[in-house]
Length: 149
Image (cartoon, rainbow, N blue to C red; front, top):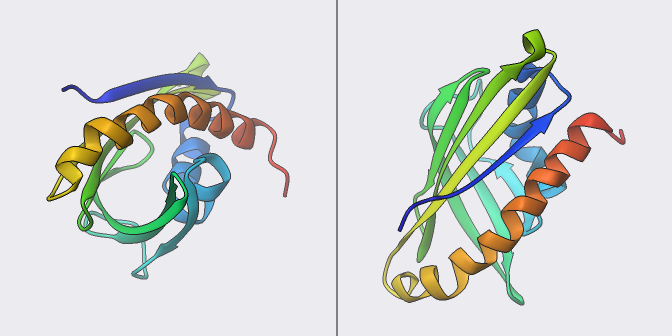
């Protein structure tokens, strides 16, 4: 199956969008299933940087580690899960609009199942993502255009 893709336009520069989406501390603010996220290493974000994310899947909270596979500010980022039965593969792109005053954000997500995850991907993970990703992008837009703090 192909990745699930969502696109949204945001009234912020690509630099602002990139800084926000690649800062793991913001994940729970714009991803509905993210309960917490913590960077596991120090220094500048780079390929190989890891983040521990706890997500609510149904009624359970499941921790997982993701690793950045692509870091190209302010154009694109990529990451993949490195543990757990359901491992996401994410690719994001930011396209400048209106001479860089606005941005088009495209996020593609797919999953790799391991063990029980081979069953969970089509039955749980993909259906949940199809519902959640459009709402996540709308939350991302709201957080960027109307920050609260």
